[in-house]
Length: 79
Image (cartoon, rainbow, N blue to C red; front, side, top):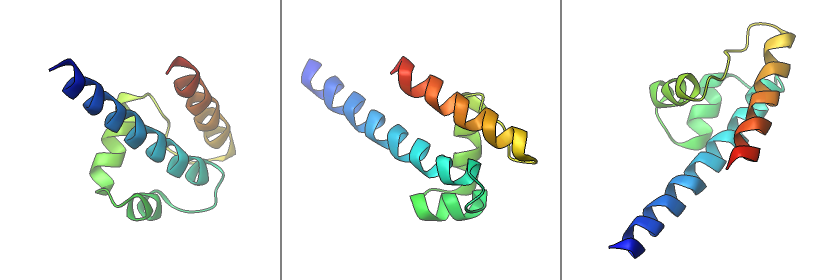
């Protein structure tokens, strides 16, 4: 049972890492949120829910991009 939990935790961690990597490009202004979701092969709504849960801002202006990248660093350092 503990091994199964470890596997699930590792899978979740890998998925979160992929999502955060995809969001980096979004915050750097390289592509849209829709493109990031497509690139990650997850529904846009799921990506938006992840952002809400992780307190990641939507990119409206350059300052939002900076705040988003800073928040990604905080999430990674907490893991």
